[in-house]
Image (tube, rainbow, N blue to C red; front, side):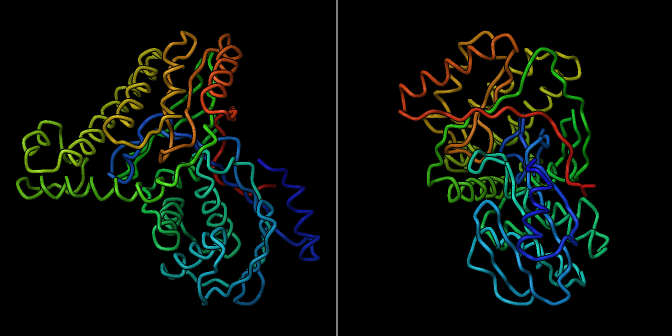
Length: 384
């Protein structure tokens, strides 16, 4: 996390007072279970040691005065007024509006925030921002929202004020995470289990492709629509079908000829990915990292070939990982079309793996990938 004292010092310099409270919320990784959350399936995320830190205090008016350290911008808006033009400020505005929809009585505030979540790397800096402000506003105004409520508020902020119809995984992981744990989350019921994740002799490392293709945001919504289309076909024939979570592969195959071939592939991926996740969790419970790594590779293959959200840069890195005996498993992580590959790498193989990736990636794409080591950290919290 960014140094809280630095954030507090900048708050004092900008607003002329030390009267503020400090909060933090992390980004997240997802070990397996991608694009399953908005299909009400399972995911296996974890909060990490990188996130957003906020210094905040009530303003006594209906005005919000926010300064972003990362963008070096100051934006003001009224909590009852129009949405601001700056996209980063829309996240704060959206959290406020979603709280108001749920009956919250709150006033304006001034704040300074910054983070060390690498932007564009698929670590969900947006969810960290929503969670940090949701947690902080809830606390300073004593609104009484639960962590589940805050996760839904963050999700609806994305839907209604940013235009991304995301699932709830990112916000949930940012709020609920615990150090040394991964979260097996049922995205339909929001039941979850904290599963110990301390892979002996291995590191979790992210290889950032340093690319983000323009398809990312628009195609995310397309995939969601394609899945909903497949569900609608099956629901015409089967009772109790509300999402892909309710559909087995056998049932999907029964109505395969009634849906577009691409729609079928998208739906089949999600059903298979849910099973991979459950099999992967069973492997973790037995400390069988080999099987878990195989499930990670299977996840990437499905994302690339069935769900169509990978890209040549992501595929290139995963192919290198597959050929390295020191890599337990690897796959693309996040929405796709760029971002990161998450790898589980044996300690003794780490240096050679990173060196190989960097050399071959530069030769292929003429750009050096970014290496991001992560450890599992705590979720949203007030800082002392």
